[in-house]
Amino acid sequence: MKTQHTVPVSKNEKHIVTIEDLTHEGMGVAKIKGYPIFIDNALPGEKIEVKIHKTGKSFGYGKAMKFLTSSKDRVEIKDEHLGKVGISPLQHLSYSKQLSFKQDQVKNVMQRIAKMPEVPVKQTLGMKNPWGYRNKAQVPVRKQNEKLVTGFFRKNSHDVIPMENFYIQDPKIDEAILTVRNIMRTYSVKPYNEQQHTGNLRHIMVRRGYHTGEIMIVLVTRTAKLFPTSKIIPDILEALPEVKSIVQNVNPKHTNVILGEENIVLHGEDKIVDTIFDNQFEISSKSFYQVNPQQTEVLYQKVLDYAALTGNETVIDLYAGIGTISLTMAKHAKHVYAVEIIEDAVKNAKANATLNNIDNVTFELGTAEEWLPQLAENGIKADVLVVDPPRKGLEKELVEAIIDIAPKKVVYVSCNPATLARDLALLAEGGYDVKEIQPVDMFPQTHHVESVTLLEKR
Image (cartoon, rainbow, N blue to C red):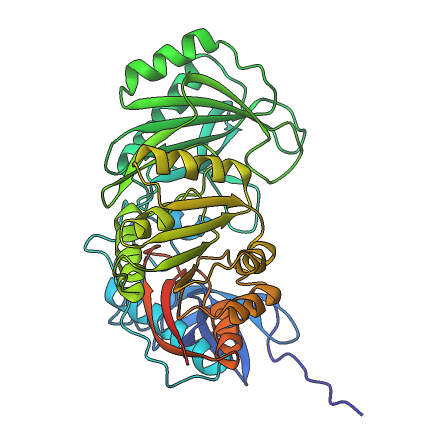
């Protein structure tokens, strides 16, 4: 007969607890009679009066009501709204400790999931100024107190908290959002009502080239009508001379997905240009492009370091996107073969190769797991293979295909330590030595960590 475990706390109770650890999402962990309580804005070693607000069978959540002691790693926060909306969950933790926390995340999964505690995980490469780094923003538009507002959703809700400074975004982007918001107010543009699926303006999206300063404004609307466009566009261009592109994206669906299928170009073209190292890249409204331009060069430099190209190598790049890694490596390789599943991204990648006069790259449309074996059948062998998959990591068939074609080196760029560890274990079984992992802080003030791993064929 199973033992019935009783939960030792109840909702709304207050308890004095000491924080023992942080979750991988950066929440403080306290235990009451062995029962974990997760608490926002709490750091290890702190003694806190906590109010229980949710309980489950295995763990609960609490809110810090009073800090009886404070950690030496605690720093003054920029804005309490950042915590409420969840975009800067680590803003209360000193930056040096954020970098250690991210290194520890990778170490933990290498021990717990990959069973490879011996693999060196280097210190996280951070930023001199870990604020104002994002080159892209997507903010919801809603109506509050009879006024069109922009801000961000309160955590676990669809309520918008009006915000004017996001702190982690390029300040020029925050400025552009407010400018567009004010113009929309001037012309009484109707904000979207999610419950009733009425109104029109759903989101304002802004992208800015870090090196070029070029700005793209995307107005996401429920219908194709945007009145009065003939006045809105000139006003935006007059107020924001850096704007090179204004696009209306139409999303008529009752959905949480931000962008719809249809784009209407209202000014310029559906693209702006930015640079990585000395390559230029055209970025469209729907392109995937790394959101931290300064750290992207740090990340890609590490990829180049691990690849150690001499100019004689054949490189394969899986999940190529708009060609940022492929074109960076092409200047140091004999030839790069690259695949990407999104058709528009492949078109962008080919255009970017032409833009930079690079002719030793072949971009193809397809899934990595189907395309890679075909490449091998055509007699193409890789000296270096680069993967930069989404958060879910590599499909098992793809891991098998990589092992089959047996490149001398694999350079794995990851945005999810857990799936990285799982995949590294499989590649190690298939004959690869995991040499070292370099975490890179692409998303300061958040719990996310990017990393680059070098593997060599045994």
